[in-house]
Length: 252
Image 1 (cartoon, rainbow, N blue to C red):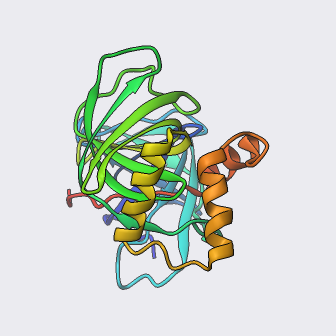
Image 2: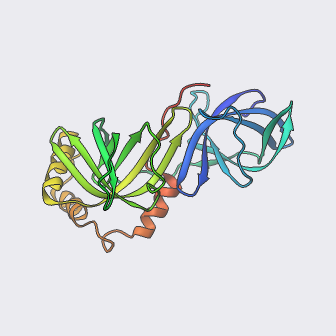
């Protein structure tokens, strides 16, 4: 399926917990290995360090596989006067895991700030669930906003303002669309915000649980401490499988 001269959407893991998207053109094949040139919104031919993992994302109706083809950068060499990445033979990685809590699309104003800092950065929400939020930024965020760090997130929802302390669990940089998606897990909020959030989830149709299930979910929602969630386990799950679907990008 990987043909010389064709371009594919790819996801690149630049560092643990931080990924980006681009377009990879297969310029040649060497046995089972492939030569790739990667294009992003900032670089026409981005060179990645050896060992970088890359996935060819399924975005074509011609490819019905359930998963992504994974490869690793083995090195680089010149091809027709330009640097090309030497990558290992792509291997299919099936998508077996699923998001553990249902989410709903939500596009409203939001802001984030670091704990103890009053400076805010304005974003938009992408989706929300009882445990987390996906946020989209069109501007470069400060280096302090990193995986594992705590931030304060405020949302201007139809049901009212929601403010929560959140932990950053995923950062996706979409080079082609020039935007960044943050996946955050809510860890603490006051009673008013909790009530407003529950009203919002109800409005978005995420209330179709039994009373017992709702009480369990609510206790996790309001408790959110380490004893109710294994933080190490959650972080590992998110980094490996991701909660956020890869954003659409414009064709190169």
